[in-house]
Image (cartoon, rainbow, N blue to C red):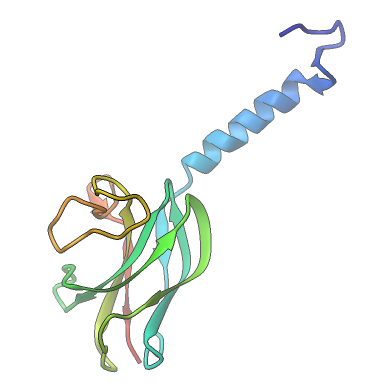
Length: 143
C-alpha cells in the first residue's frame, strides 16, 4: 500500500479507513438484547420487537413461570448478526392467554448443521447466549 503525499490511499483518506474500522468494531460489540412486549399469540406466533446479536443465531421462545427459569422451547426463528427488527417466531404448540414466554437469544454453535435449529433444553448445540453469565432475554405474557 502506498500513501500519496496528501495522506490518501487510492483517493481514500487514512481517516476514512480508520473511521470505517472503528464503526465495524463498535457494531460487533453492540449491546446484545431481546426486546418484546405482552402480545396476542392466538395467531400462532410471537414477535420480538428487536433482537441484537453478535453473530447469526436464533430467537427462541421458551415457556417460563414465576420462577423465571427457561422451560421447554415452543418456537424459534433465525436472526442475523446485528440488529433485527420485528422477528416473528411461529409457535410449535398452543399458548394460553396469561402464559409467560421467555424470548431468548441463542447462538448457532456446536450443532451439526448451520441454519438448522438443533437445541433441546439443556443441550449445548445452538445454546443460549450469555453476557457476563446472564441470559440475553426478556419475558412477556401471552394475551
